Length: 173
Image (cartoon, rainbow, N blue to C red):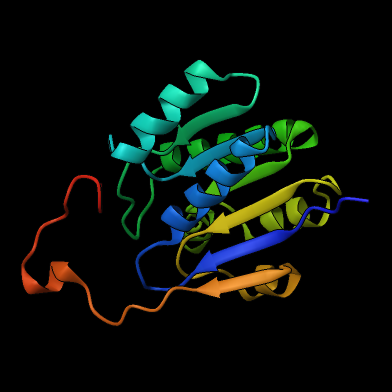
């Protein structure tokens, strides 16, 4: 009997969303049903363009949505909170019909107070048995790490940005 997992990709290093996208590609390659919900992010990136196009071409297997308006400082707006709540509600509605659900940057949404840790914990505890849920973003709460089956921490050892190299299309954007 297939059992879905809870995967956490956290840490200060680069690659959390990229790793989650690799899982999306793998799942779609097996004909599985996938949803990729982004919290906070609103920037037009290569990944957002790709996901929008793939969802348009294959709506039966891929759903993609952004629930954010971009950078959120230490004083989030009510709109930021509302968008995050909508994203979590959408995830709850979609989860029963999915094989893979990626909640991109949900850990950051939690750390900024856009979502309560308890809400995310409750969602994970009640996820459909066969669905794999991926939680990305730095600062994953301990409670979610404890619930996860697999936790990967991306370590920031060295980054081109600190050497003055701007974000590159196809690598960072």
